[in-house]
Length: 222
Image (cartoon, rainbow, N blue to C red; front, side, top):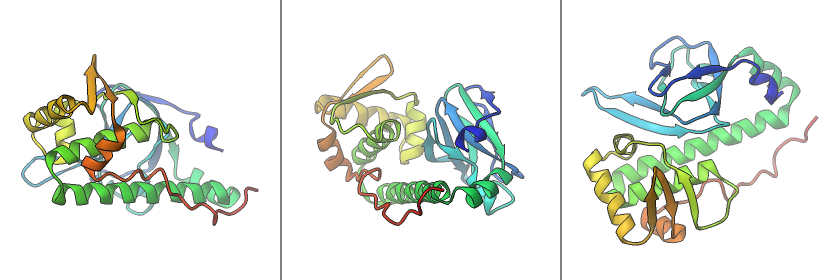
């Protein structure tokens, strides 16, 4: 069923917009390659990035509830997306209740992570916000990797990190250098290595929302 959602593919270059806020939306999407972001534009013209999206993420689910998109979804890197019609979900919910329940689980995980981000924007330091975002990205890329030391391609500009954390690009640069000087991360050729993830988590008041799941209620597969 999941493979059927990815039968059609569409390339999208870096900076390309897949869906614009307030556009009529009839399709949903699976991201199959690259990194994307969802964001809203504020009245003063500034941008608030809500989340970064990685391969396997489903996008545009607000169209199941609202006719017009509540967010803009754009490519951070060169991407490939798989569009599919909303009717596919009608069949999925009817024929595969366990799979549809898992999609609800993923949606709730995203909601909780967004709640964490909102709380961080209002209550934590700049250093804590950047530390938490690095951990969130690392765990989104490799949610089952328990290693405290991990290396990954960040693929984000400092402006994009700033728009996600409510900081200026200059401030982001300063916080990244501080984390390096503290021996918590290393950066080389666009890649970030987390040298001490437990300490980053303490600094960032970060909770790994890929852990502690209770899936005992899921219906059996048909």
